[in-house]
Image 1: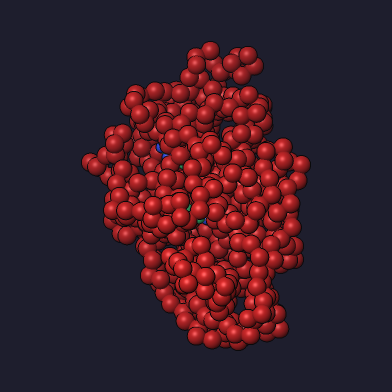
Image 2 (image 1 turned 90 degrees about the vertical axis):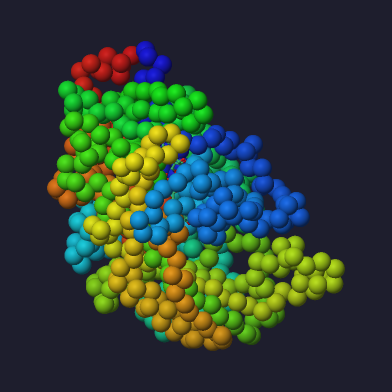
Length: 572
Ligand SMILES: Cc1cc2nc3c(=O)[nH]c(=O)nc-3n(C[C@H](O)[C@H](O)[C@H](O)COP(=O)(O)OP(=O)(O)OC[C@H]3O[C@@H](n4cnc5c(N)ncnc54)[C@H](O)[C@@H]3O)c2cc1C
């Protein structure tokens, strides 16, 4: 057997790639995971995880931002986490319209630096594009994905409360984090006034009470340190590094190859299938080809688009499976433009313990069961109440008397609120390859041409109005609402470009995440999303990946995805 031949190749080792690896290896397939970045070993490679603020040269604040003009805008980027973000200078792209592309190129991808918020979609997110006439009809519904949400949640470990809401289905939860006294007051007031608005504690991928399956992964209980973005030595939040990749490795079927930049997918016209991928070794620049029966593309939305656009052949001159010409179009994201803040009095005798790694949420109450606004799509509100802000005590820059005072005085209560809104996919929002500009590996640079529309504007104005109303209702003072005017992309939830759909003329993927015109290639990251809902998306990427991987395994068993020449090797 050629050492470069496997049963399956997975491109990317982040949140979705880790899930593809786990499922395919458990299904008995010899799986090669190709990752463009360096290796990051769980625990060993979290150099800042146990550091205190005074251990950092810049007290943990942003290091020299000149190398990182884009990622420095991300709230999670600072001196303690910068090693898990790309250096913008080393990975240029062309912003035809401003788009902040936040990337983490390493084993584990952005699973190391995500905020771990994990809510299911409801049936309404799957049905509203058809109902309200945007994007295209989803080829699956909530019932199709429900068992895979459960499958993923049990393994990942999601803390949450069973809230019994139609618009935000409950999942397989570990015990929830607790709302603090101010958040509970807001919850009470909201419940009194509105029938369709609910304050809940955020559901998140943290082990509040590890089960056997989590202990078997070598993971332990969350310590509420909220230093998660540095990598968690306890494995208390879910990352590919602490969970799916080591689990896949345990099967003996996994080969993980870091520093492997996938340049393109190789298409064989005779076989009418993809036969493998071309890789450029990130360090030696050597060009290597790897072969496999099936390929999972999990390079994160925009890089997945890039790889497919760059996979040209006589049969597909504009990119793999791009018969419809829509590859790279309908890029979508989440609208984070609405923010609000306030102070509140009357709770000075109350405090809270630990650094809770999640916040309170008000699930979407717009356009849920029917269209009821002058804009399309829904938005959720995330908020938290806290005392004194993050710069208190050891995190403050004070010393001596000022320091002692800052520790002794918890300070007043503040509330911060933000929106996460559904952006509507449109043809104009797209990515394409630059005809001349190349990256350090000779691969065309990506052009991003993505912008807000009037719909986003109307939605964020509505958020500002509703946020003000809710904070006022709760008795808050100094209420301020504003538009952040941030660029698309900084929401870090880019999706689309390789969307799922029923019709090959208007979509790239079928209901199993197979490319319509190249069935042994599966795209299961954010690129596959037909629309974007209002929930944080990664739980849905994981569930789609597990579903597609299990389908691929069953198809291989039925010999549906292989050509005669490969039959022998499957059973060898
Ligand atoms: C600060 C922050 C907070 C976030 N919070 C949340 C949250 O609370 N909830 C939520 O749902 N989502 C959140 N996200 C988004 C979440 O991280 C992404 O949705 C998720 O990581 C996407 O998974 P993925 O597998 O598609 O991509 P990634 O996790 O980014 O993994 C992609 C991998 O592919 C590799 N790769 C790329 N190109 C190539 C190539 N050509 N060849 C080989 N390998 C390649 C990359 O190096 C990377 O390792 C957050 C993101 C950030 C940055």
